[in-house]
Length: 231
Image (cartoon, rainbow, N blue to C red; front, side):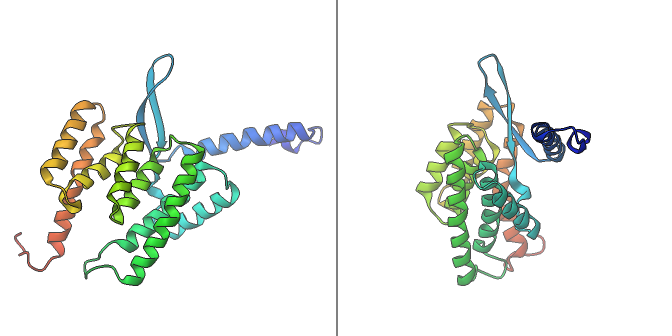
């Protein structure tokens, strides 16, 4: 800040100080971001990479405002496209999801489908800039799954799993795709997850992928009148 305010600092020195300050502020702001780790093989040795876990870009007005402004400021940033896509995906899935009172209204389904297309477009644009963005692959798979596009779901899963076969976000979608909600069986879903966990024992969070089906069934039982209080 002193260098930026000093009358003796020329334009080059001012820009250099501003760049350094921005880097530090971004680092501080990003320290609390939720991230997921995955293995990376460098020319020297194996190590860990990280990517953002984008759950914070949810259906909230704050997520809408932040992702919109980020994309306005950095229209060619793959991360800005990813964040905006994540927010639109969250809203789309919320509109497409059947509620406790019955199926989603036709107007909600139409609005959700339109937002899903917009989110998918942003994910593809982000991948065109950086093909390694696992959350974009996962987002495309989740959107395709939500509208019943099995071929699109599998294509997105294959592209993402080629980068990281044990990515939790991809694993959850893959397990769901093999399960009864999408025409498969519980046995097939459990078998896939068991093989995946056995092949990657260090990825302990993969256990979470096995909880989604049980949680969905539990919620359905809690809100369905044909189940007794004991059930």
